[in-house]
Image (cartoon, rainbow, N blue to C red):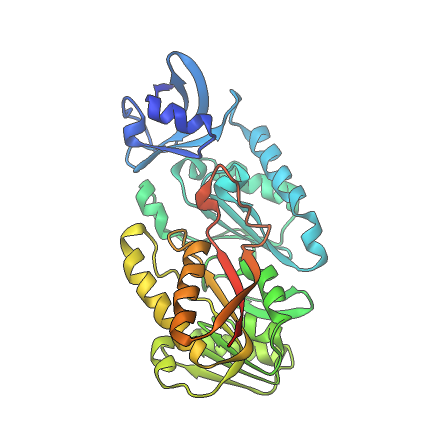
Length: 379
């Protein structure tokens, strides 16, 4: 199948954009979701894509070179992604092996926890090749088991949501090892595909600062607070499941002097009077799209202003946004305006992003989805 694209679409693909919307195709074809098509501009081949006429993102680029999309094609892409991450096995037993468009496999997420594989197929095109991809993962990686997590985004592609074991057996409980730290996780439950692997490098960076009193807000499984190994650590988390994970992870890592507060972080900050020399703010995505941005900015401002009130002079503040709508520049602007209210100065110590097993490609701006900054407070 060949599909003519608009000039706007052609200009995007010249910059190697990963997808086109409906209005960037001259005609929306009648075809099954995930059909492979050549995109054409003025009669010339531009790219090969998965086409889904029912999705707002109608064309997802698979290749900018004319080629057969077959088992050999996927084998080469998977091998390249795996090889790129080889050195990470020196510091961890768990990582993301394939990160969708950023590994040139749109809609395929593969996380590996030692010999357990957790997969998600989020596009109709990739779902059509599920059988071949599972075969390749078995051949190339020899896992104990493969488990599929159904992602809600599948609905936008006209796909059913199902979580199921696709091969062998996958551990229910698993201990993640990274940088000599241990974290308990349940592979078939929880956020993403089990654990926030993308913060691995940032946990190590932030953990090197502040060693007296650490406050870990939106603590999730307690990673940042555990890395800091402070004389005292307070974890604040609203989820009962996450609080139980923090308890287990503190025990696993020999953390003794700590407190877990099950609370909404905003309400906690209203009342907290104790001071800290390291505060981490790592909330869930307040702004999943541009329309939610205004509310997210307001929420962030409240968090930073009230955290600065209880941050000691010379103390460190780590801020993380996992939303593309709240950028690194936004975090800096918010920190600056908050420091003026606090009558303090903030020095930039580190800029941070997701770890390298979650690649950021310049031609895919959305692939930079996690940004962070570490600041030092001075009066």
